[in-house]
Amino acid sequence: MTLVILPPEVLHNIFKWLDPADIVILPRVCPVLYTFTKGNKTLSRAVYLRHFDKPTDLNLDWYVELCDLVHLQMICERGDAATKKPQLDFVYDVVNRCLSHASPRPGPPSVDRTHASSANVDFLSNLFHDESNLEAFLQRSFLFERARSELHHPIRASVIGSSKALLHQRSAKLHCLYGRPLLRFGPTRASRTYPFACSKVYDLRQYTDRTHWGPFLDDGSNSVDWEKVEAILIVLGKNIGTRCTVTNFFKENWDDAFSGSWPGSYSTLPGPELTSLELQDPYDVTGTWFRIVCFLDYNDFFSYNFPVGDLLTEDTPRPALDVGEATRLLQMQLHIDKIEPPGPNDGQDLPVVHFRGVTRSLDDSFDGGGNSDMRGTVRLTQEGEVRWTTFSIFNGQERWRSEGIQVGGVRSARGVVGNWFDKDYDAHGPAGPSAFWKGPMGKVERVGDHMLPVDFFETHGVNVDEVQLQVPILTPADAERIFEGVRPGELPSFMRDQGAVQNHSS
Image 1 (cartoon, rainbow, N blue to C red):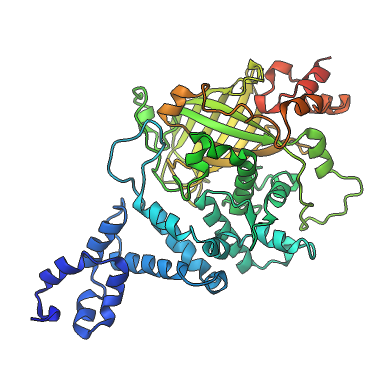
Image 2 (cartoon, rainbow, N blue to C red):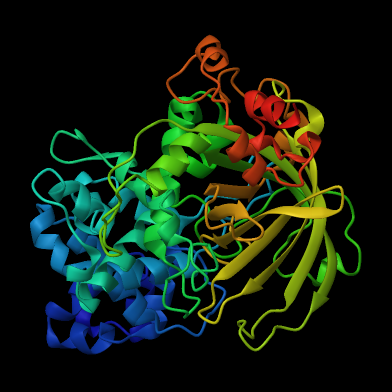
């Protein structure tokens, strides 16, 4: 008896145990197997669910999904990056679909993790373990293009056509979903991305009304500018540095490929019982969040943005920047205030959720004056991304604002990435990068013990004694303009500089 004369149900029970790549090849064996397997959605579904996560939407074209994932694998297993680069559009589409179909593996939530493992994420992580795939698909944004060409000649954004700009955005988004900031690249990994990312993050020309001073395109569309998000992640990742390898506090969100970069990935042991209002919240706002904020010394920030004799055109990036930053870690306790229908400029699939809460500094070297109240909103954009807006409140007055995008979608464990700035959009700054993510119950209970390295809050590359000796003192004019109407106790922890505060209060 030969295989091809077996009844269809027997063939199905045999072939469902094959690998996805074998199912795609079967139609080439003979006409009988071509007829049986080509477009066979029932068989494709069985094979898909054996190797990948069960998606929320079960009305997929299972044969197309399976074939595309096999094609993605074949592309990623090719020899060098040059042969893969033309496939960026296809890779972008399939990776996004694969993540959107991800779901947690069965099992109880963990007290120490914000999300369970995922077969889809493991599949993508294995593919992008290959350096050539990082080069071909994750290092194609303007930032990497600029870093490669800067040694030879400056590059202007205006020389880039719309099709190339789209490729830049898609590569940057893949990098953001990948989650591990690529701080070095090139054959010997000698080229650094940080100075060019820092240049974009701290360039005040990026902060406009049309971008809402956040990670949005400067065209009024309210669409996410993934190249801005990419630059922010690189800056934050560099400032976190190797600390994520010595503590689990950052490792899960900053050191694992595609970690939590999918909708609904946040999952941990339940906290206190939710109210009826909180049960209506689709974004899962209520709970404890951790936030990282970076900023430049204001003298460096001002001289970078307003140099003497500045002749740069609008489409020419400011020079690469590498002067060192300070880093602060905050804890936010949030709860729902009210829920209302989306506005005309919002995505219509989910409501707008208003929240309130408190923020406290986790840096013991700064006093309690850095603590503040907080309010904000979370909503969908018209393209379906999750937009967070927060305000820091001191003595009842809003002082600082942030705009961010939740990487991975609604209830993703990856967290929110964006910019902080003066709530009145001060054209002279300050402004900088920020990210926050919801913590697992285990870390919430233990934070403040051994979770944070002693040196976490030092300025990068400088020891504590040097920081104390080199605290910048703002001029009276600077302090008067920046801190107008602000009492020293109102300053958020990430802006508290003892020298500056003393100078202002004197």
